[in-house]
Length: 424
Image (cartoon, rainbow, N blue to C red; front, side, top):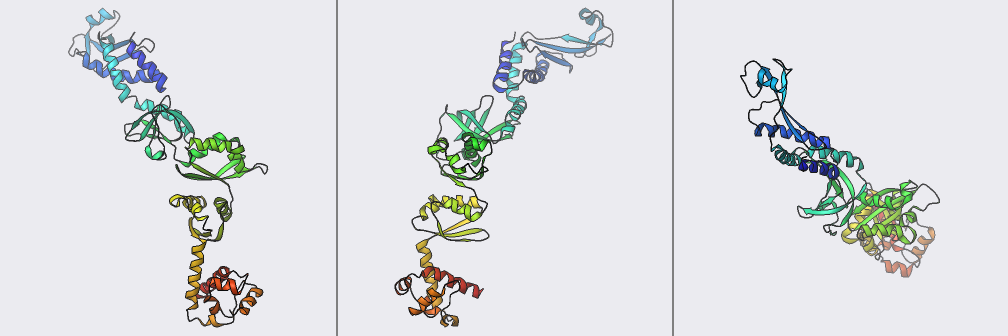
């Protein structure tokens, strides 16, 4: 029994999932070439057989039976042939066993070469059969080693997977031997003819699958995640919808006292997660994403949304290095322009002063502001602001003192908008 070969067969079957017959066929191909090198006088008609149970190897060559031998590598005399097979005749082919004594050692060496050279295709097929259809699923393994800096090799059992440095948050640190959970991102071919299983912990789908794993209502489609965006290691935002009026989608995903979402946050090393109700209305979805902050002013354009928020809310809405605003923009599919309320008011005051210095004759007509009640207009006229020019040359403090209850900034926006429309 060839113990080395049997050990190779068992290892590849058990650890790599490669069937024994595939291994044997690949090794036999390699051994045919080895036989031609180790046995002198062999022709091209060489065959190698390996017993799958014992690992025993036999090498055969075929020679044509002739009366007079001209090519010993491919021919045998009738006399010599009948010594091996008494019933043979001229022009028949005779199979002759020519197994060398040390061919078991040669076979083991060839087998090791086959493992690194010829079995890549077989292993690739196993990887594709086992993992290709599982792309997008969560998968667990053990960190085996690091390559090329911080790229991680993860042992999944039958195969090793790759977790590239770009596929996990920069702040996450791992150690060899640790258990790791990740998204099976893709299975791809390699330049050497094999296949690689690529993992990811930075993709938004990783967080989505963690929620599906944790929340039964997501698995049975009572609740669905309509949109999800992520800055790995910093924050994830997801909008959820319920198809059952009795089921609160946000509360379902968060869990009682936050039990469900805490497990996910722990897996993500304390990454922030915002879960909001989904809305088909973009503005309503935006307001859900801003909560508890509110947009005091909001205008939607073709490619962006402009808003004004309270000064105290501004840092929260913008987030670290503007990332929260960018994530909100990704959720609604438009860029977000955010302005502090005090800055917006200051800009309005400057624009009103510039308007008051213009030579527009309409500014000197009797005060009239579209969309403003007569009571407010009469109050302003009674306070001495009987023309637009006088109003534009006033200050917010003047208006609050002389015409109490009048919102200078609301009126300023209406006046400036009217003037802009008139120019265009």
